[in-house]
Image (cartoon, rainbow, N blue to C red):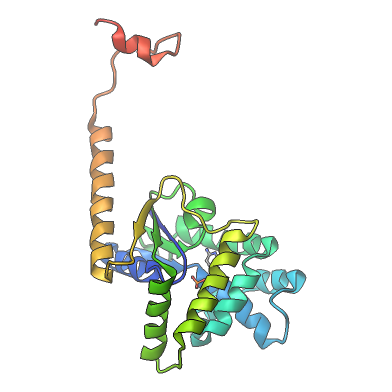
Length: 240
Ligand code: DC
């Protein structure tokens, strides 16, 4: 079972992904960390995150063990990530790792929750459940300021909002895998919802999808032979 959660920064997807993974005992992958790790490694080695060839090399050599580096959580890494993530070769290099994680979650978990920008559209288009979380830029910037302050870091609201808008524009406008909801995703605006309310709505949605699937699976098969004309509306009118 694969659960995809996409959306812009600060919409609450990381929090929801962690809670769902814990609740269902699934493995969790924050796919943004992969892009952050590439961007951060480039900054640390003095390379520009706008250099496609260097970024591709770094992405291909990425060691998943570096994903726990606390430096990846900072805004410097976030901005570099937003730049390298627009490079098609970088996205292609990171795709296999993400799909492998989803198909064979670590530690024998029965499922995986992946959160990011293109999980439901590109990485796992066949995911069993898809969510797309949104919130107004102002609410997302406020959440980010609070998070930074809680970590003892300085944060200026106007700057955070400006950076967030710039990142949103880059993520939505890029040619490959732009940030957009999958057609079959549940879109949840979290502007006025706290983490508990988002979690409860997600659980309700999962339960409703599961019961709809159970009803479909339990339905007896149609005993009539297939209609050679292939026109179901005529079949429906025919008397048995
Ligand atoms: O979710 P985040 O803030 O950690 O993501 C950092 C950047 O990585 C963000 O600007 C967009 C990019 N990203 C992406 O392009 N595709 C993903 N699946 C995840 C993140």
